[in-house]
Image 1 (cartoon, chains in turn blue, orange):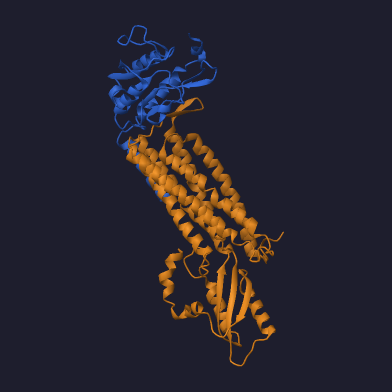
Image 2 (spheres, rainbow over the protein chains, first blue to last red):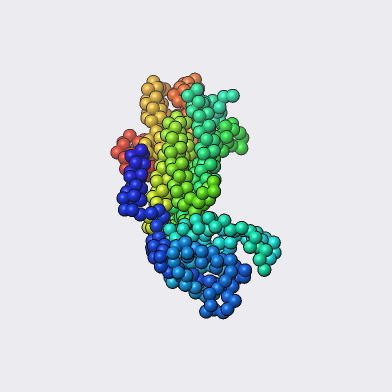
Length: 166
Length: 337
């Protein structure tokens, strides 16, 4: 048994250090592609998190939009917005046509089996006063990108005051 | 308090073994509860992790079955239950085996379908002490924690299972001993996710579920064979129990017996023994002869209980052929394994 443990650790070391692979890694290389390039973001309207004051073709606004813009800056990337319905955008996410999706999604989103939801980055009461855990969605299995976004959101330390927004 | 199996008072060695086994069963349950809680906290969407978690949940059944069975077998035989309650061990064993079999099949199906559907497991970060940590590392840490204790527990239980002739305990010990493989498979699966091999997770889950399924099949088989009153075997089900030959040899040594064979029924823990004896020509056994033989056979081993001596003109066919077809032992041996 001890030998097996040693073997496993050896494999671990070779896999992580030897090949210069960071853990976790994206199977489709999302994070590498986005860094210094383009961040394609699907957006559905759910105020105050996301809104389209000037129509579909103008840049969206809102709390989550600001976060995405800051995240893109952090990655030195340019944001390309794609407006659509959640169902369209989830399909686009699965195909890899967008890297992430925002629109006031919560941890209880029914899409959770098809996309990777981030850990809740803020909890606010909804219109009925129930606590809602707000999340963003990334392409399932692109774990380096997911971890990068989650770390970014943790570092932002988003406060609950957004609940007071109109 | 003297421990007992029905009306059998246990010899010192067995009594001590039983006490230790009960303690180990509680220890196993305690460990499993910590493992189940820890794994639940970190498991996320890893299929391998969920399967390993399910296995840990299932691992609660054998020690629980053991504790319940040892509690029930302590009851003395009654008018309603003239054979005592020993069969509770067999029932517990069958229940444990069936649970493993069903869950194993279910998990094989689940992991195979997520492999076919090419599901990419998302594994993000958890915040531990204000630090975001990739949950894969936490999963690996918890899996590593679950790797070693079961092996030690299994090793400690195995000799006790032999001493007590307890199949549930044996099955439990055997599964514990192989449990580190689950942890290693799980770790490989999570590491696979880490390096971007999405299929590694479902593949590891498939390996783990197959091992659960295999445990289920072998346990259901041994339990069924025992409940079907197959000839008494050693606790692992691999060999004919040595007491069969021992009692036969004793019968052959009795002066008034021309020919004698025992039919041993494994009740779980204890054997019920029916000794068929053909008296020598012209020697009708007296009541004293018969009573003395019953006592002597009972004294051979603590496991021999409810010994009956039946004088017969000829031995039952299936017992007589035992020595004649000694070679068939080998061919049927694997049935019981």
